[in-house]
Image (tube, rainbow, N blue to C red):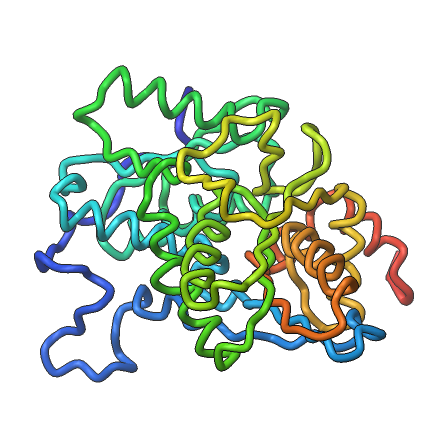
Length: 338
């Protein structure tokens, strides 16, 4: 299987400590690495899509504000820097992982900053925008059969690592505890601070499961009565990029089902419709997984008399405008030129 890009870039530079957190001597905070801008994303209040909820508020973390454009920047940076600190990621190793897009983009961006050679395996069905972004960062990319989804890419990466383990650092986002720890130490703490400790319900969609696992675990420690709901596609074959239907997929090793007080299932069409509503009613152009998260959050909110429901919108919708759904929607848009 050939890669689209080839080896490139200067040799890595190392400081011996986590790269993103260390400014150069005399460097002001505003001049630090792009990686230092990961995290601390806004918490947005939703208004029009929540009409009729009374004393229940729904808010969402706007993760496209991360420099790589998605929530996956958090986990990718933690995975890389934990591996550097442990000596498992060194300049002579290729940074390798399977991805449905966003983690690959994050790893490609981080690799460009740090000087690592990055190889990614993606399902051929991911959006054209995602394919082009990882290539723009200089990553080498190969594609697996679209009908095999993220599991097909995962199996291909595991095959390569087993064949030549000393050649790669396998980021292994699905099984690497650094994934959920990024959210335990970051996302959850931000939510707690941004809500003044008033969050009562947390809702997140499942892909690698790292966002839900780490955030729910920390929030439940901070507020033992907090209700956590996970969201996943309703069917094995679906169109919500980045999410897993766990009953029919390779279950991530970091998944902890005990953290979910309830499991919610969302149809592809509902996720798409919610993504459109976010754009048309809130001015938020978010991805399909955000639509699924919103659908789940609204189900939880409608059952409550009062409370604060927080969810996570993993990425922006500009990465999906070439997909069939948005293509058809835009073709029907008023004032469209022929």
